[in-house]
Length: 258
Image (cartoon, rainbow, N blue to C red; front, top):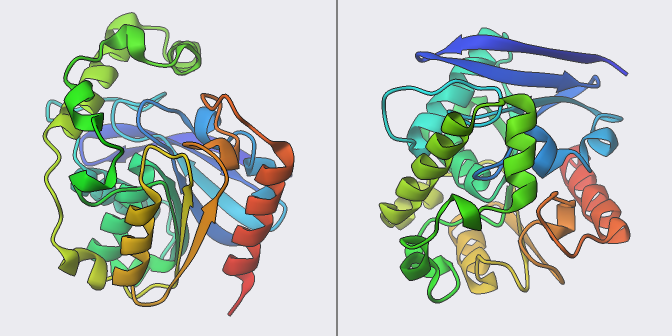
């Protein structure tokens, strides 16, 4: 199977990416605190049988360097769009999980011409979309509250505890300062979209429904699962391989359907 990895100069950072397989391009955007492998390691082999996967690591995450500026979903969207331009990919589908799903919506809003289809998994656009108490609790979390597997995997690819703490702090600050988006941002998205959420997710199922109603050409899938279990993220305690295979099958059918 075709595999390539590399770095690209992107808006002042050195951005890491991997390419798996061949076919129509599908960009994978990981969740907060994560790497390509922790979010998508379970499903990349499934998708790479049918698609050319471009998996990215965002600012300060994994292999990718940082910049002297806070993280933002808008900046992440700009970075992914610039990377694709550097790779001479004019149009792709995008699959974003959690913070990566929020970034994917910004890509579709800011760069509609590069988007074929969207898969938006466990993402938010308003603070009320998270489980009660999420933002109150966020102000007290420390690096010790970060799932151990995410800390371990970061240090495997970037063995620097200072950079791990920096990523954690930037992720935390982004969430603490997150401000609701106007509905018009989602209403501007015209790409066919598949919205996914677990019924025991940190993102409320009602929020996924609200997103699906604002994006005109969208489908919705609520699954029995928690945050990321349905795609087999490393930090999930409730991974079910049959569920992961089912979700991958549904996503691939969605991407193949004209």
